[in-house]
Length: 328
Image 1 (tube, one colour):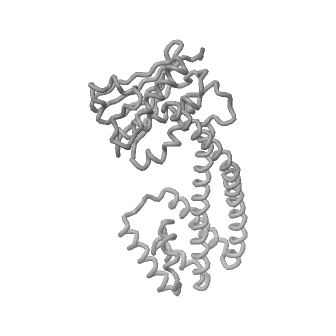
Image 2 (image 1 turned 45 degrees about the vertical axis):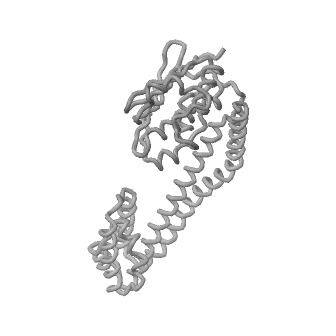
Image 3 (image 1 turned 180 degrees about the vertical axis):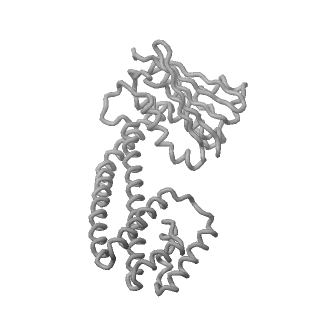
């Protein structure tokens, strides 16, 4: 049974590595395309301004460009408003636009409000530009803000995809020899990235307390990442929603120490001596195999000549892993 479970973990690691490899090229292409799009949007904006300035005096154009800059800065630091207050602002702006002959003002209002514009701002604009130019100026401003927002979302999304793919590749130690000079902080961070969806869905706060200049160790990186996955995943399950998980590192003589702690209910004293036994689990039926901690024990103790210990009481559980810096 243990050998079957190990084979499944190896197969899963190979699958993750293969998916990361296949996703890497489109993720890189999307990231490059987003950067190219940002550049082209800047060029397009330059041409749009040239068209608008034909209908504006230099002073009017300067005022409009200042307004655009202010709107960008406001949108960047915008905090979520109360939904009812937001609706009131949009309705007020829509009414003003309609009263000035812009019948589709409801399309412009949400983005203009997000940019910090209100009826007083619009009054100031209308007093400086001709009536037949007002709609073009506001449409240009709304389109500029919307485009920038969409490009920003694309940029953040592609960066996130790229970082996840990078983390999966590093997590599986794809294309590397089994025994490596391992940066433990990198492995821990990659594991947290992989488990990020679960941390966010449970609103769990992660506290990283890393020792600066922690020595790299000679180890099997992919195997150690299985250890961090099991320990951090168990901590997430233990604390539930709104809990805290600590990831700490330290160094002592020829060893490095990694600690995964949580503020969950703790493990009862009477069963703490059994938690590393095969098939023993404190989780509900069907929620765990009882092999996670046993596998972690075999990897740390059997494969790396280290040790793993658990210290638990209500409100605090700590798993401490000590690993030799030089694997023998």
